[in-house]
Length: 86
Image (tube, rainbow, N blue to C red; front, side, top):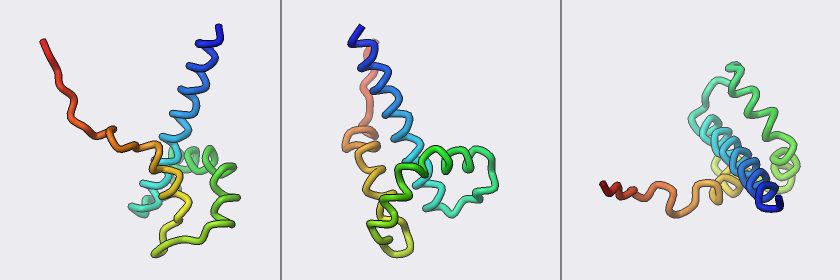
């Protein structure tokens, strides 16, 4: 039972981290935020990021909070090649 709860929490945090990373990428590429999917991502991530953006200033016109919060979501080994054995 406890492992199921831990798994659900882990999945939810992973999905939220992915949404933060998507928001960072959308802002970095200057994508249009009139898209309903982009608006949903902004609404989902705003409660956590807006208080942090008030405390931490931007860097070169980019929000520094987005860079700091999206780094753990990417991780050092997420783009490592995967070996497939048959």
